[in-house]
Length: 231
Image 1 (spheres, rainbow, N blue to C red):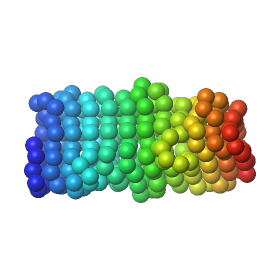
Image 2: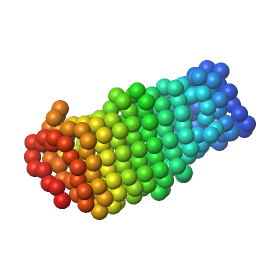
Image 3: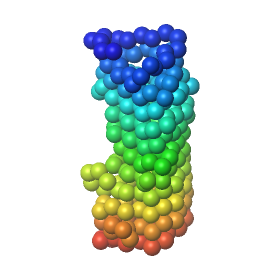
């Protein structure tokens, strides 16, 4: 369905096949995707409440607007978000591969990104309280991450994107359970909190540098082409 204006759907919509909705601003009741793919291409603001989205296979959200997210959004396959994301409550994105290509603003809410056996790909994240990320195929960090609470990365991290990477957790704990690789510099600032890096850092692809600040720093093997600073 393509419109030059708004789209309004009342009640529960059941998808009879793969559906693409394109317009300005949507108003939804509930979606039963019936194991079909759903693509939302809206130039305005898209409201996504996990409790109103069921039985999704692939979910794609774009169109150049913004999406407000709340609740648990589950899919049996991938989720791809081109929009900027605003968390209006605690949010859990769960699928097989989660790709956030644009910035996420947390508004002091918690965010869980669970990519299952796929890859979790993150763009810039700010204003989140607690962040928990997993993806057994790996975690790709394309931009910087700022939280007021803990950051937990449960699988191997690849530093990517333009420039160096910074993880900032205000007087909290940053935990990386897997390896960290990538030809980028890595700054982690946990203030008076802790940094726990359980896996080897830079042994696959050496980091440019590391700069770690915390009251407690626990590291394994660390390999860089440049300086290592432990504050």
